[in-house]
Image (cartoon, rainbow, N blue to C red):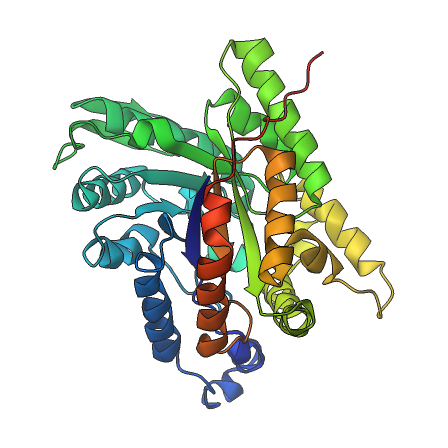
Length: 385
């Protein structure tokens, strides 16, 4: 199995200042504890370790406007590493199609593909969940599913045809052509992935013939069931072969389980808190919002929880932390459940100092990575009716 690393560029310690400034212009001059420039330099440092330490790929995300994650152009971010590496593949998790002109998205991937010159790119896509991000891009959030579908059509057409046009509800493209043309031998079209957050979005990935990317939001048992249904739709309704997923996990590797538990119990809840604040899961905006019914229901359930409820428990249960031996056991379990083709690790998150992230990453690379890369392909889930 291939093993990659993804970079998030989180500035978790800036949340209080950010939210105060967002709420009132009187707070806009509050000092920033950690500058964004420092976060970026630390992420560049970790990214430059990925290839020398033996990992197979480097990934990043897309988010805007908050300290949650600060990579606002994934293909541009990865281009930096394309020029400073020789061997590793790359991937996006995800580019949010409804926010962008799909021609610009296609051009970004084509340019990155030329830079990598034969190395693999996994084109991970999604439709987004942050109301701040939709508002900032001036795109109505209730149009997300339709805009995603149109943009995916345009992306596929632009990558497969030299000359093309498109007439949709949101995109009106005259006859045109991408230059540079997609690289001869490019596998971009074969590597289209969709990450879904709500179970109701799973059939979209299955029916669009896109591969599955799991960034876990529920327990792995739930994701396994979703993957089985995804593959059932592919096989029974379309006659396509089952697909293996790429799976993402947050990792904290330390010499002992006790040491890892101390780090995981601090930094994983910080990540969970950051996600809660960025997505504003407790906000009223999700109620009645077309296409986000699942999240509206989850928001109601969250609001009804007692104040002392451990909201970080699912992060601790789902992800990979412990001694090298324990990390291997957890990874083997996830692989046996999901039949993954690649595992992607998040080593830096929350307010974790960069030296701790690097220590975890180096220990994982030395003690866990070789065995994980040797995992035999596990059976991929497939429900049969």
